[in-house]
Image (tube, rainbow, N blue to C red; front, side, top):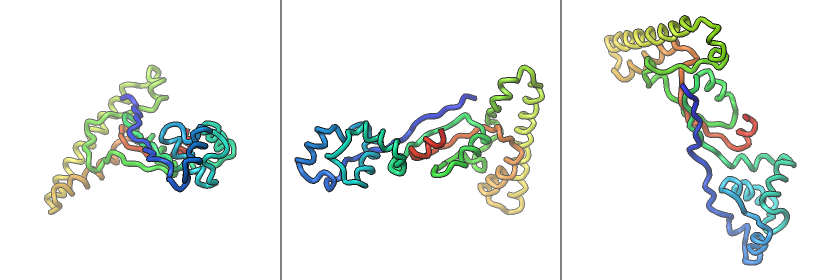
Length: 204
């Protein structure tokens, strides 16, 4: 299983509010000083920062402005920029670590709604690195045993719950929710992860 990280969303900056550039003279200064330049994300950050000091038409050009923001640690203005990533082919062990980071949002593949009996497992990089010195057959057998046991327990529990009068969809969800405890942290998962630029920089 290969890890995949794909950018699927980013900000769209509509434009600087007219209140911050109230007349042609100010607009000319902005253009002359090369302000409000860059992509949507950088323009949004610059707008947030310049709102604090009402500084459009004055001071630094855009590129120097962003360097100054980093130098003085005015990181809160970068929190307005959110990026959305689709991440797949990773273990639930990795996602458990990922969700520990604050100021992030997650929509992850559900092991209660999804049948995981045929899903791949993403082994830890150390196991992959040294697999030629490890008991590879034991690893493969363990994974297959977990998957087969999960499949059998989920099937049997669903059947028993239906016999006890539980509606089929609810019974299936509850059965998978119970059986998933037999699967390892190396089970692959997929999620959409949204974070702001400040959080992403801290994470990296």
